[in-house]
Length: 107
Figure 1 (spheres, rainbow, N blue to C red):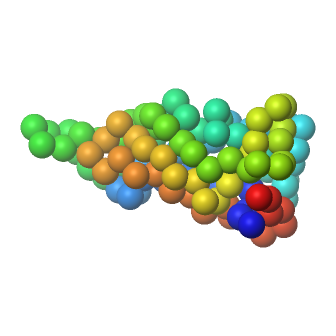
Figure 2 (figure 1 turned 90 degrees about the horizontal axis):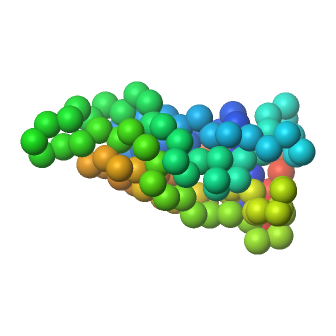
């Protein structure tokens, strides 16, 4: 089991870039709306410490995200879990997350 991601969760690239996920108002955990993968994919990345040059590209957008719950759905789609992985469009493309809450787990 993994913890459910919310709008308060830390979704980030390895170079300290942050993603602000979109939430689903139908389910709230510890005062924050839960998020689905579609609330992360396509979102902007801010604060990435990589600078654009001829050999590096700053993370600016989330291009993919995986790691949704199989059984806990909101609005017809599985909620995003702390086991999330994905990619950005930058030179350090890995994406990861920390739930920031310990009240709700899902599989």
